[in-house]
Each structure stands twice: as C-alpha cells, then as structure tokens.
Amino acid sequence: MSSVLRPRKAAMAFILVTAALDIVAMGIIIPVLPALIEEFAGADAQAGTINGALIALWAMMQFFSSPVIGSLSDRFGRRPVILLSALGLAADYVLMAVAPTMWWLVAGRAIAGITSSSFTTVFAYMADVTAPDRRARAYGLVGAAFSAGFIAGPLLGGLLGELSPRAPFWAAATLSGMTFLYGLFVLPESLAPENRMGFSWRRANPFGSLRLLRSHPELSGLALVNFLLHFAHHVFPAVFVLYAAHRHGWSARDVGLLLAAVGTLDMTVQGVLVSRIAGRLGDRATLFLGLFGGACGLAWMGLAPNGTWFALSIVPTALCGLAMPTIQSLMTQRVSAFEQGQLQGANMSVASLAGILSPVFFGTLYSASIGAGALFPFPGTPFLVAGLVLLAGALIGWTVARRNGRAAEADGMAA
Image (cartoon, rainbow, N blue to C red; front, side, top):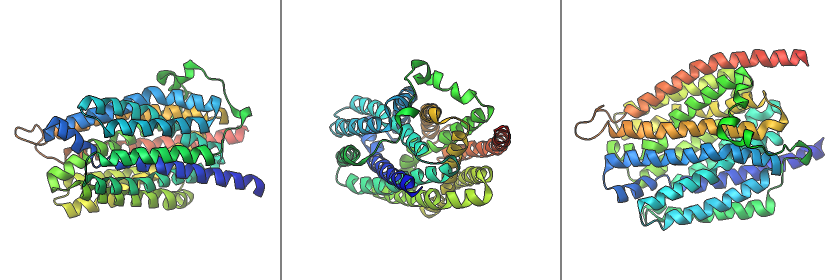
C-alpha cells in the first residue's frame, strides 16, 4: 500500500510545482498588459474594450484547442502535452515582450490561448493519481498551487512593471522555460498505457467533446454552473486593473500587491478549507457557500466607496475558491477513468466559451460605464452584474448537486 502511495504523492508534488510555475508566468503580465494596450490604443475607455477582446481571443483559442489537447493526453499521456505547452508559452512571452504593434499582441494572445490549454491535462493528471473520493481535496491543492503562483506572479509583475511594461514579459518567458526544464527532468507520466484511449477527431472537436457533458443530466447541470462561474470570474482580467486605476487611482504596483493578497486568500481557501468544509458540509453545501460568498464579494467590490473598502472586498470574494474543486470533483465521479482527459477538455471548452463571451461583455459594459455620456454612469456596474451571475450559479448548483448525489447513490446500489 505504501509503495503505491509514495509515487502518487511524488507525482502530485511534481504537477503542483509545474502548475504553480505556469501561473506565476501568466500572473506576471496581468498588472502591465492593460498599460501596454493603453500605450497602443491611447484611450482608457477604448483600452477596456480592446483588453476584453484580447482575453476573448485567448479564450476562443482555448475553446478550439482544449478538447484536442485533452484527447491527445488520453492517447499519448499527460507528460508530453505539459512539456510542449510550457515550451510554447516561453516562446509566446518573448513574442509579446518585443511586440512593436497591437497586432503582435493579438498574435501573442492567440498563441497563449493554445499553449495554456494544457490546464486540462493538469486536472486529468490529478484524476489519474487520486482516488475518486479524494478528488475535491486534490483539485483544491491544484487550486492552491495556482493561487500560490497568482501570489508571486502579479506581485512580481507589478514591481517589474515599475521599471518597464515589457520587463514582466521577459520574466514570464524565463519562468515558462524553467517549467519546461523542470518537467523534462522531474515530471513522471501519470497515465498507464492500458488506460489510454485512441485519438478521435469526433471527441477532440470542441462541439463533439461537449457530447460527453450531455451523456448524464448531472454533468449538463454542473457544466452550466461551471460556465456561470467562469463568466463571472472574467470580470477580473477584463476590467479589474483598469477599474482600480480609474476609480481609486491605483498604480501597477498597488494592483500587484492586491492581487497577491487575492492569491494568498485563494491558496488558503483551496489548499486548507476545501477539504475541511467539504468533509463537514458535503460537496453540495460547499459549492453553494462558495458561489454565494463570491456573489456577495463582487457586489461589495462594485459598491466600495474607497480603496480601503475595495481591498477588503477580496475576503468574501475568495470564497469562490470553494466552488471550482467541488464542481470538478462532482463531475469526475460521473465518468470513467478512460474519459478523464476528455471530460477536462470539455470542461475547458465550457470555460473557454465563457471566456469568449464574458470579457467582451464586461469590457464593453465597463466602457459604457465611464466617461462623458456613459450609458451606465457607475464604474462598478460590471462587478454588480458579475455578482448576480454568481448568485444564479449558486441557486442552480444547489439543485443540480442534489440530483448528482441521488444519481451517485443509485449507481452505488446498482453496483
């Protein structure tokens, strides 16, 4: 027994470090990308729309790439997919670091959307090495690793951004290169040859992969909750930096520090609280608590009258970290070991659909909320709308998770 657990624990440690390094690289550019866009666009309101469009482009590339990458990892294993992604990200950040025009940034975000699709493989990796009843905790650890990267990334990006808007991109390229080297020499394969599935374009195309989500009523409902969660969450990359600068006069350094605090809270929630709360309340109540708490936090963020209250709003918002691991856990229990990569690819497609629609929506809504003749003359409007989206997700999730529990009990009795 112990001989089996040791390699699994080692594999989990390796993938968590890899995930953290990837997020550090991505987080570094968050405080400075809007500033670089403003450098090319020249107008704050226009920058909101362009930033939203670039995030949507990134998500659209993920939508088309994630199912392919998930299915490739089911066929060839998780390790080569993760390595190629890290190498591609390193090249992409170099491209954006030297970008002389907006179109170079457009190309860079498109490439980043493809290479970042390996996040599906990270979740499939954890499913490979974790028992079904411990996956909420495992996905909480992945979330904590992401959050740890999110602490260091924006903080480092904010500090480097004081030197130059392009310096964080060079740092991100270096970290992605380190991720590739680390994985090349350390990361073990998690998918046994006997558990691999032949590659099929029918399963790998983004619309075909969604068929898996329709194979069980519970998966369809949870996929809708997953969509709403990601839709609301994209208010942050779309308008957070621009809003903090416009409403509260914050610099890239200030935003980097606050995002580091957000990452610290997320890491605490997902790395420590998820397993304890889910173990005591169950996945259903944990899911509802996370979504409802996040809804309250977003509303607070939009209504905050000053920078201090704005900063404090991240505390209830961090409860959102309870939702993602429990959604992932509930969904993985409804498919076989052969379909974990396909499931994660389908989940990423759902998240990418939200990522295509949401940033454009929130970026446009923000642009319509500021400046002379604003259609909605209140800059916090995007956060209030995002809070309502999460509230809808909480109500739907409460109902769907109850059905999922009943279906799991029925399957257990049939077995």
